[in-house]
Image 1 (tube, rainbow, N blue to C red):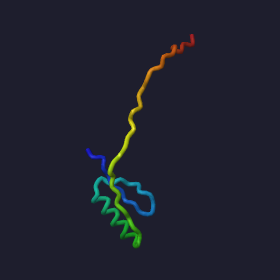
Image 2 (cartoon, rainbow, N blue to C red):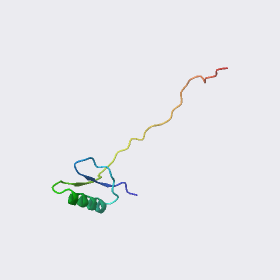
Image 3 (tube, rainbow, N blue to C red):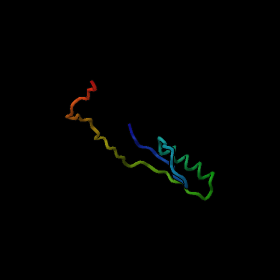
Length: 67
């Protein structure tokens, strides 16, 4: 499974993730036709990062017993 996606960037923030480059290009073309003179860019993912080293650990303390 690929995590790659494409987005279209105009004057505002890019928000929608397209599953294929072709979908993103069609959307950029559609937006360009509706907004003459404005530029729209197709952005492609090239890499990603994840931090996943959170781990559970025990403590050496006396158990709480209110009785």
